[in-house]
Length: 305
Length: 91
Image 1 (cartoon, each protein chain N blue to C red):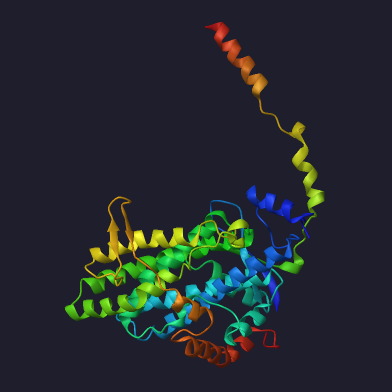
Image 2: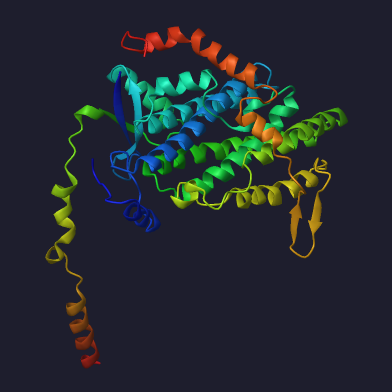
């Protein structure tokens, strides 16, 4: 062990002073568990996202975009690898245990991957709205994260997510400049994906949120959500689409968009693995893991681990 | 399986830098996986992987004392002040 702290007060003073915790430090167990759970969920989300992305490789229109989707799928699998490694180094669970928990529905991943992408428009909406939401929250973590290995790995993940977001906006621009039918398809996708994307940030942070207190996250959920709203509402309207929020209004005094009341019940259902597509998604991921056992055997030292 | 630490260098600038870690069965697969996970967009053109159990790490309390050796530095302030005074007196 490199460093240790006599009390939680000492540790928190270290964090408040901008200290970075390393994997071999004797960090308090509550911090270890909290940072582990956060990274595990991020890793799971990358893997679940990559599997959805992969489903669309054969269906993506045009060779250029097909190749980009292939690269994006590889990026996300790569992010999963990087993050599972960082998480495993915390010594709470091995990578195999994390994957077993994911496939058994015992651990969490982002709400947006509990919904089904039905049309190409849905994929565009995900690439545009969801990737941006993920990027906004990752940037906020990266800025001030007290766990060194996670902060460092986020630097490269964020760089690659930047490519994905630009790709998403490029696709959105094309569909917006397309035929009436294409525009209609995207409007329907927007109706399905606007709220799940907005809810990716989660409900307002609680006053006693330990992730904030320990500088694992550096900004409150509502601040991040608001950043996304202020950026995407005018952008979607600029492309001529309707934001599917009945309570949407421009607050002229505050110079900001207000989306009105948010129904958090759908988010809570996804957190309990009860989203519209949760069971199928988890089942597919587990099947995929079994089907690819031969690859892991080929790449392993013979024990299949 | 072994854990490997990954180091990357961009030719012509910077030192080798630690990029992260990965799990691989052997050295040959470790460089393949390192290329695919850490050098996807030419982030470097030189790559080292080192098995984590081969890394020799010094203890913090062995390294620590060198943070407290001010006599190994010189801020040059006294000499600079003397030079300045000398220049001014010559004007």
